[in-house]
Image (cartoon, rainbow, N blue to C red; front, side):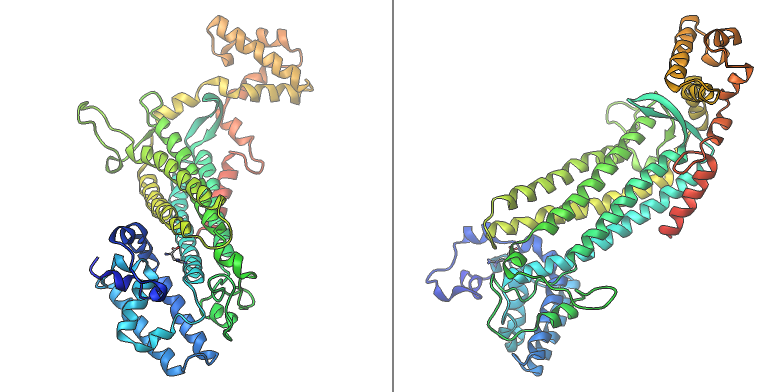
Length: 470
Ligand code: ARG
């Protein structure tokens, strides 16, 4: 805190005889985290300055001086040469004070604006950027997963329900299920970006301004426009505009859902990586050893992804708790809205990168997968279907196969090695072809309807996703 307490109140100190205490400054500052908004804050101020000139509230010359000063400050910030000062509270005051030192006209910049609509504007610009970034990073992970799926189309594994072997699928089909989840995440961030695309600038502190501003002009300047028509889009109620934190919730929700998906993907991989399953081998670069047990190779990257999801869910809860009891409109509590979303954004970015890098290097173990998927019970349902195709009602077919499963267990003989007579005794519609059901290749080939794991389906799905995430 280089500046004295007086600087701290430079923008609002008129009615005060004493400045805030050092403790209060330390307690209330947000520049330590909201400096992340600097680029957007400057964009917002440039638009504001241009709008003020456009409407004749300030001169064109003053506006140009402000814009030039802001661009100098932006360069400094980008170069890491800007001296942030916590005693100046937040990013908005830091930039405005620095500008005012250089450009006297900057004293007019805050005309018809409050930090309330200013921070709402900054955050909407941030959300548009962050959503695009998130979608891009998720798209990157999807591209890697598509490659992994493509390379493992021939590998069959058991699919599980209740963590019990259920039915055979290809590794590709399982990976494509992950792709579906992540594609929804990318789409969800797209919706969030769309919701962010509305300008609150000009709402002032709560009730707008008496000055003849042009909200549509500044909205256009900032790109808050309809992507089809190019028309500016602005908020419809000045009170809601400064109090609304829905986007924070929506963004944190999108992050939390993505985190939950990552966590479930991670859990699949962690299970596959156990010695008991050993379906996959994880890359050395993303696993760690034990300081005590020399043999260990732990799936830490995936465990951390699973762990980070807790944090992302927590961030969403924080924002809910923060907002739920607040009367309209702005309350200083709302300053606490930023750390959770910034944290969620940072975490999802690094998680998406880690997932991409890991997925690039995951190797399937063909022998172990083949061994697991050779369990004929995985095709018990196919046998029931076989009976159904011969006119047996499904409930009866299910019962017959259940009896055969029990018989195979009792005799300690794999179900597909039971004698024909056992099958014929339970179902007079069967003939010796019943055993063909247990040919895995045939079984997969019979699953070629939309969304199923048949090889042609998988090929088509990979191609379709590749087109979407090209
Ligand atoms: N740093 C503040 C925040 O993020 C900016 C808005 C301050 N507004 C106010 N009325 N004190 O919430």
